[in-house]
Length: 159
Length: 226
Length: 246
Image 1 (cartoon, chains in turn yellow, brown, cyan):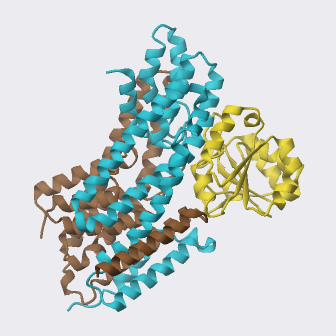
Image 2: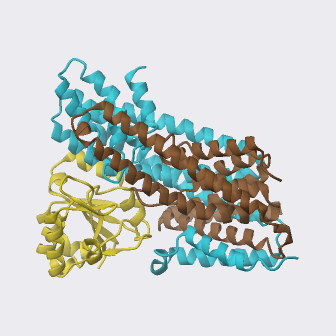
Image 3: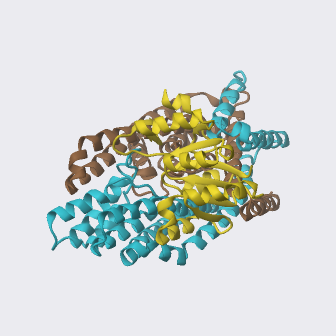
């Protein structure tokens, strides 16, 4: 499988993704799955600007991502897939559960109704329930902002 | 060599300045060990000692990329303390003393940064309603208090760090048979940190090629200078 | 003081009240306040307060490029863009400005200048230090002002303007220079510190360093072995090996 990272991060493309993970994983393409960004040219301009020239950035909504997932997984180039929220990742996992085995929680920041679990992970009750459901459905979930920091598995995260 | 009261006060002031420079204001490179430690050496009248501390501690700082609110050690005040230690001990132990003081202080400094951010959050929480209503005065108060808190953090770190450096300077290093092994160890760790960081940051593209060319150039320069 | 100048000075302290909840949001709000005061001088207090509150919400980017977001947000407010769109602009700017700034500055010009400083310092001493600090601060001030002006000029179109600018290309070049300068600096620093060492000591130092490099890079061990941890371990071992008093 050459999609090496399935990451939930509300900042989508940023330094931790491009440098922190992108360099050690030798990433050559990034799939950004977000229904809103998919319909907004100026937002796509912004994210494109943040990605190095030698990395392809693909924008997709959930339906398009589900349809192309087999193709991306078979792509010989190392890649990663990003969503800004858990609901998008869950919808994608529901569509192609066999292709998304591990989910990385990289950044879900403070919003009203969310409680701090780690300094970079804040979760509301509905999001915790969604994570538990994803785990029941077979996804391995852990939080890890950078490859040089220890991963925290879901059980420890929700404890 | 010991420290005059004026030098003591100046190093505390310099420690506070570089601690603020790291994150709060103005992020003007003063907090880099090469700068912070060398100036500390200058204050003590031993630029060479401070420079040696700056060189080795900078190697460790090159491993640190402060990206996306990740946790990282704070080498700023640590380098001032390391520079003071290096300036006060015999030359062959300077790098070792800098590491002995600077490395633990960097870890402690990183921990205090986490605490500072938590304390800032409490401060925001107290003014949440005013901020949510667009009260510019509340926002100004938060900035002012954040700066004062960081200045206090940096001053306290400088006080502890310089205090430890003075204790390290009291050790009769010249009496130990293998004292310089400490300097070798600190340098080896620094070289490992800087090279590993450079390899990670270079990734697998052309940057790795430029890193290799740089290393080769550095080796040639050293061979020619020997 | 002119609002732009005041905003520029405030941008130098954009992370002064950094938190994990809002990150640099309060600092961005603080920097935007003088410009918003100017923009909303003839509009209602309620509108101005709503804009100020929006400007202090969660924001995280590279601090040197935060001015781009401040400028774009103020221009969007000036153009009467609806609040939810401005909030979306902030969110969308956050990650890309962070990524670009991290590449250009933290992984680019800062290590490049430090590498040059490490190479030059043994010969030029303090002048090398003064030189890199001066160059850095001139670049830092210029970039902050450039970003603020770009944002103020382009507003919602700032993404396209950034993409067409020198910035993405500059980030690539700065990282190449950084890789070269850091690579060249390592042997020079080692030589400087090991000047009076025996061949055995040089070999042992380089050998131990290479072990550290492998441990810090290999995926299995890199989570546990950071440069700082490896250094602390070596200091501990060295203290045990100092030997007896002469």
